[in-house]
Length: 394
Image (cartoon, rainbow, N blue to C red; front, side, top):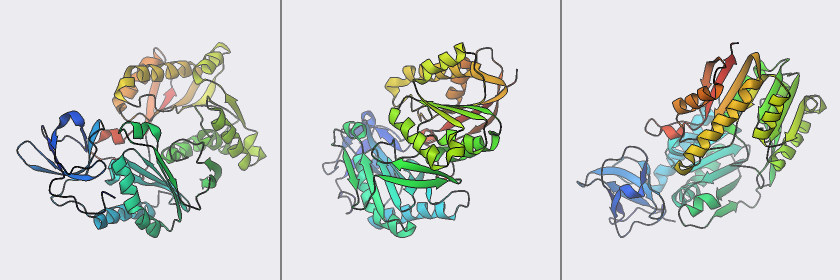
């Protein structure tokens, strides 16, 4: 494993200028040393041989360098394990983070670039975005199990991430890792399917927003667009919404959402109508039928996964909000979300503003992920989740 031993003196990369953040693109790397190994650590230097720190290197990736630290000495295996344990312990010590279902490592925010690790009771599920991140997880995994008392794990280096580095995808599961597991959040039960689900199986980042929807749903007509496996829909129903209409294009996600509703009893399940449909066409139909809702949740997938899809993604955010806003009842609340890290908060706000046209909406709250998703000051893309809470003043 490239990270288990100290890097050699010829494991280095020289930049054309000073680094501006924790990621360096290949076009900004002047030259690399002969022992710079894909997925391994290298010393990062400037054009005048100044030392900038240590980073994971991959010569075939557009993101050639991912900083691990800015120290003089390379981080040892013991240093990295200690860093992972410290991150896990912060979650255990924070009373606002439910330690049985939360994010344990949040990539650059915790000093582990390209690596996210979520905990589901006795399970750790890792999503890795580079070969070096895969090595990081394998290195710190035993220390995380010891700290958290977890016993099983899964690692996913998916085809898209692997292709970006001309590597092969990797999926690893410990011997006792299950296909499905049941978890609980705020008294609601969910079943996670690790073979069919997205990301690590559940979206811990929306935990606090789900709780707020639950608190304000009483007696309301609720529309949950892109409901996935039912997180917002179940929360609204548990908050005694009068009716919840939840829709998603993913047929398997809708089936899982129905199972999740049934897990929580017939009383809750009866409040929710799940619809397998394209969000854009279904919202148009609701508009033609003059339907109105007191609370609307828009939580679409990442419409801007990379810079090449920027224009298309902006258009989709614009259209989704433009179709939903007329469905909002007078005095109602719209929660509009974006999980595209490349989209800055002000850009998302401007996109929604254009979607509203002449409808007077007021932003009453701007939220995102919880404290288990820390964001580095020099890496604003880490604040990927943006949530605008708006009221209709007319």
